[in-house]
Amino acid sequence: MVKLDPALLKKNQQSEISSYLIAADEVEKSLGRNREELSRIAQFLKDYAPDRILLLGSGASWVTLYSGYYFLQTCTSLPVTHRYGPEFLADEPRQHGKAKTVAILASYSGNTADTVNAARACRDRGYPTIALCRTRRGKLMELADHLVTYESVCLYTSAMANLLWLLAEYAELRGERAEAVRMKEELERLPGKFRACFAKSEEVAGEAVERLKDERFFYVLGDGAVWGLAYQWGYTNLMEYAKINAACLRSSEWRHGPLEVLPSSPAMVQFVGSDASREYSLGTQAYCRSRGARLAVFDSQDYFSTHPVLAPFALHTVSQLFLIYYCTLHGRDMDAYGEMHIRPYLPGETYF
Image (cartoon, rainbow, N blue to C red; front, side, top):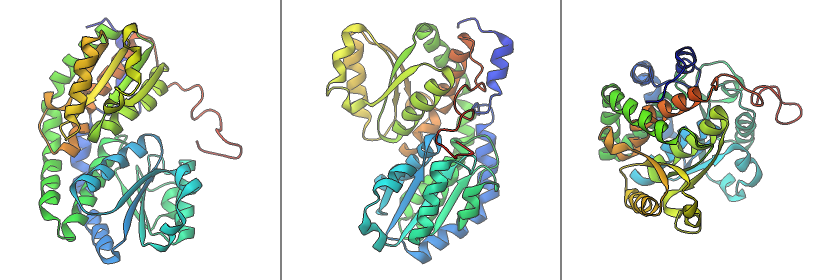
């Protein structure tokens, strides 16, 4: 393991994005606290009987919603659309205005400009809205018809657990009981599994940072249920916190052009899940190894078995630890921003 500044390491372990030390407890607490409200909203969904569920967010909150999308898309017959706020505002098909739609919008702060604007557009279209946020304060909560809060900094794990519980409850009420019950049972087991994989996660993250400590550019690969986490880790972790360059790609797309960079022995981090996309991930991994890529692999099956949709939870700790170790090694304070939260991105924005 590389030598790290203990003071900076401690600070980064307590940064706002760093949740691996409390993720298990917070999932447990928020699901227990919200059980009744989640059941009530699930009953609303059944009674309203939407033609589709529309999931809207940006950044890490878009990634949270991806897991909800992946569950509905692969495990239920419920129609679902997953979009960025600006994408929805720019090109939402007109014919969807004639369908019964319920929108679920996620924002850690409740003030994300793109998501708040999307919520206003949903209201104008007559879409009932459900907001998934940290607290009850913020513009998004003022616009939403229903609200789920997780009351912690665990913007990924707690938010995702609550969303999946809600969608599983709804699927069960619609008669799709087998997958719904399995999902809820696995969500209840998550906290214990989180705690049990801590030592393994430390070991793998430390070894990976030791090998790749001098890299300033990473290709980040993922597919299936873990694609959202890979995307978040590359774009909103490495670039936002480590302040280095990264490119996120689907493992299954690597063969269609990107493999031509392999002679330069690029640094790669691959996220591997346990769903049907796994065979493509393993094929890409084997090819890249054979052609000289310097590869770190975060494989969910190395940590614990769970519902395939929940594979990102298995990789949460190891991926956060790699980020914390890497940032600390290079002297990065993970709460120090130079652009985001400092300068308005668009004229007139008060939160960005």
